Length: 133
Image (cartoon, rainbow, N blue to C red; front, side, top):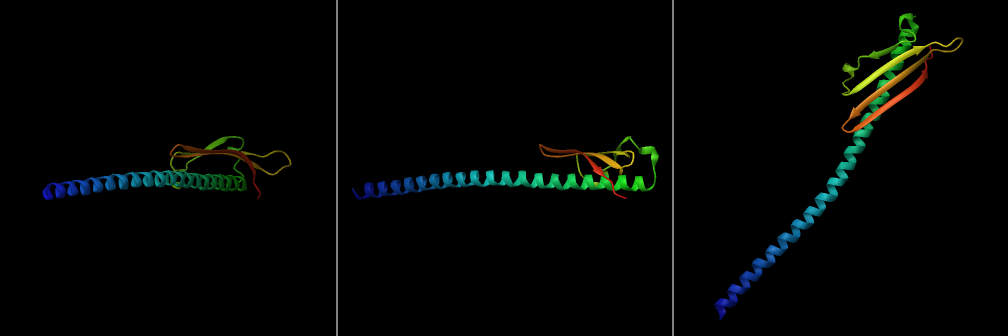
């Protein structure tokens, strides 16, 4: 009888270890799920912050380009939409279009259209800015 009791004790120990391993795997799986959802939120927020910075840089670049052309009295570009090359800014999937207008007896204005994308997010801006000389 002692031999069968010993066998049964070892079987119970193996069964307990198996239940313990399965429980640990379930807990680890739950933790991974919680952590991955937090990582997705951080990834979304970092992409959003990146796009906000890109949008501000593109708008500032458009304003600087408009100011330089207005100071140089470049009348060829007035009231025309000019798409600027943004390749050197190293912002993928972006565009910058500037239209300069000079209303009578007012400061010059620049209509700046900006678009930039990352992942599944796209930021667009379509505003007029006063260009102060």
